[in-house]
Image (cartoon, rainbow, N blue to C red; front, side, top):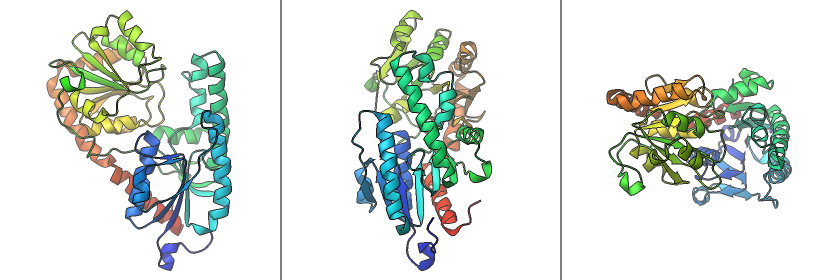
Length: 389
């Protein structure tokens, strides 16, 4: 570590080096990285990124980008290993130029100050819905190897960080399960942009959605069973007055055929992958997301920010943002009867939906990106001064 005085104590801005794959608005962790770096820059921190992809807005904001683009882009296992090896060398050569070094998972396994964990591969590898258990073929073997190598690398990366930042209480527990003490951790959740995700009304017809019917929303990867659209469709079959909008890439998905088999195809509206998810949320009555395994679901924060009551499960990381006032938390994500009961309660009780909608929107004020990035800024200052707990 750099043993010199933090630059703020010398009268110059803190110098921050961030090592991560993506700093872009277009995906979950990439969006978190984007907002944190932008906020830090607004507070006067000098920010340098070692990254593969960076949003043009970052450079416009005065953020320096050291481009690190692995050659093996088609294979994510080799891509990630190459990124980390090259990032390690860069960090060692630049270490003395920065007050703080912030890594993300297994992007850096040399000594650094802060590491944010959005995902713990050792926990995912043990999950009963891991891809290798669902696909007993070459693809499943590759996914097992990918998770195993990343689990080993992540543990080394976390061991070399002074402070660990789990992005949910689920991730915090998973880090404890592999031997890291809670006094080294600071949980900072993901956020949402209230300018994009906010309560309101949208024209359903313009979005390809049915009008004048109760409408729930499911969003996520629907090419595998991890997000649990199969149980959601089974519950829909027991909720005859409800329609379901499904956002997720339809190609290669088994669930349109399942909807037809269950007799709910007329009430299930597959919208494919969409970038206007915020508008779709405002067009729906509530959000259904009983994921079987999730480390930290950004979409839950986006849903409550949109004023949607949420039905989810305890297996969904990030579900701590859902209270009894703003949604329904299921014990078992595979219990179609319990899910149907929850869905029918919301369909049949307009007053409950409205009360939950108000509570969801109110609670979301704690999870704006400015609040989340501000928590990181406070951690940066504490860590640079050596005062972090």
